Image 1: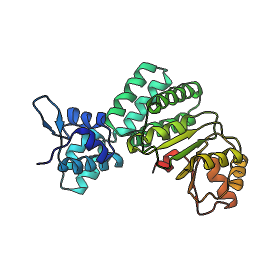
Image 2: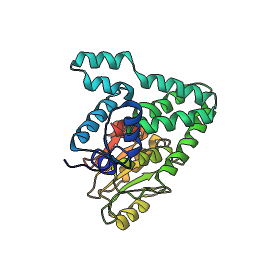
Image 3: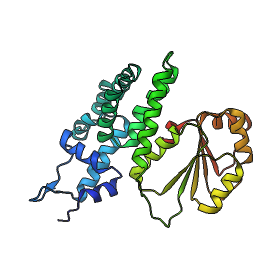
Image 4: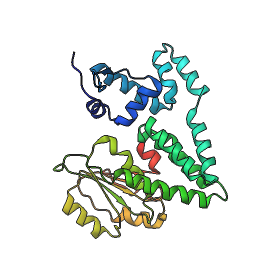
Length: 281
């Protein structure tokens, strides 16, 4: 039978090797063949197994419950299981408590453990982005939220600094950050690590002339413009002046979404999303 190493399984499923090993050791979701030297080897059936695990995890089933879900023959049992044990709500509550108490080492440990168990896109959609949204709504949480944002920005940057994804000759995805804070663009870059897609994140863009230069020099396959903190008037100016470059452009941020809703100015090659959560969905 054909066997292949964990690197190939990661490439074929988009789940990084650290997460695959955690699914095996902690939850028994995978049972690879072991060589005499202890190296893991997988088969084609493992690819389908990982894809099933990923499907349920993305729906919100806690990874610790996925094994029971996969063995369940009843859809109603699966739905009851999801409702009975919403682990992400518990995780969010516990994480927020640590952030508000400024327990840096404990929230770091909790986050790193979750990042080993879940693909980053799932961790963002089910964990970190809801946490950030809740902290914005809490009174007297400004200092704690800013501390978390600074930590996450640095963490995401450290994760992507040595990333060499994609083929050097292929057209890149360009991510343009219009905020003074790079948090959202860095979190999005972090979410792209498992995709192996070539991308370039650009800060400091202030004019359409800057954008023209990027298109001319990089010939991107598509562009994502991210801004969480700009006002609606400024967002409208960007949308109104944005040229047609014959590639799709994605605008992520509440101000873009609101500006377009007020004027209906966006053309077919421009796509708008109210926040990163909606964009990742």
